[in-house]
Image (cartoon, rainbow, N blue to C red):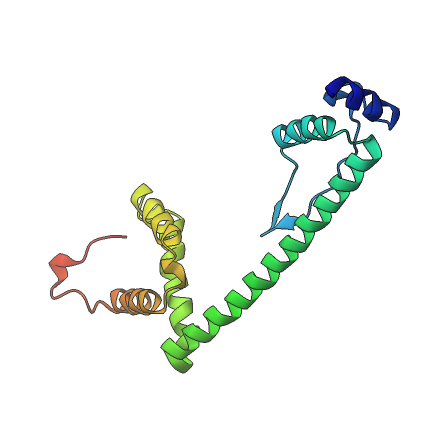
Length: 168
């Protein structure tokens, strides 16, 4: 009997309506350097569900606090996994590029910075974004090729005559 359960829930402290929950939502951690926030729609749905289940404000607060702890633990796991992935990437780059890795990375980074700053116009910015979106900024073969290309362009190795040389 719904009415009977509603009387029980009211006596146990459930608010009259879902919108009457006044739960203080704890701060969420940063994930990947981005501050996280509770989704207002999720909060509204939580209040409706808590009301339907007959939770008191205290019970709802316990659930919200525990949810925040789970989210923080998950963020810590993600952070640790990201740190491990960065170590693995660095090891893979060193394996692929050998002792010249710092020079190759510096040259490739410079070429990418030129693209990212748009020195080649909007197409350069768009190309750089495509590189990042595809994850190629972490690919050893791609980095090595672009580092070599950057060095060779600087040395004029791609040009067979002076008429092909254009630019600033």
